[in-house]
Length: 255
Ligand code: PEP
Image 1 (cartoon, rainbow, N blue to C red):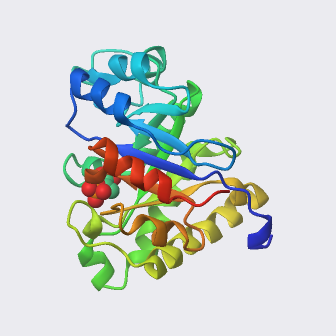
Image 2 (image 1 turned 120 degrees about the vertical axis):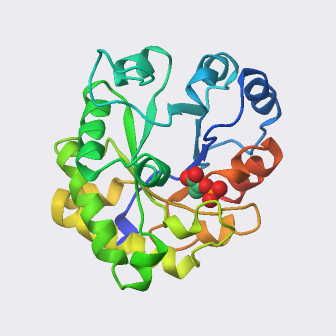
């Protein structure tokens, strides 16, 4: 299928990590004011779980809300964890799965990413599965094998879901570092991911949104989102301030 037949949804997502309590969440949503209308990107926010209720109450209808992590079990003795059904009941529509901080700070493995992806889909949460190589892996020429291994593993949990998931390519060396992948780097890696998706799910691959994440700012967002195969962005630090995030949403091309 040629690039011109692709119809991925443009998406601009903000991952607030361990920031933004309920009051800050309400203030952010009151100040968020990107251009709206046909062709404008879907806006997603991933507040900390304790701010989800405030976000659900304050968010305009054009903002989708998600959680930053889920457990793969539906319920049970897992202190501190949140299940997909709990997240859904609290108003989340999406779940970040396998963010690099989950993988590298908390030791999350590919198999867990697959189980979490499956749990999300089982309960009607749309998984946003993150993949990305470390600097050492990139320097060793292992970037593509690593992201393909991560994608293959996640697809074990996503099989049969059609297009009900998103992928975020987030090179670990670019997250929170101020180092941004060039648009060419992002396009190359995301082309590799798209190719593997086509092998695994055929034409549906062309309808999966693949986001880029890693030090996206208002000043580099337009260039990154203009790159081939970059269907949107996942933003950390620059999503914490409404004006900055508004500028990033406004930098997205019409689709
Ligand atoms: C992220 O947390 O997913 C991220 C991309 O962070 P930052 O934009 O701060 O690099």
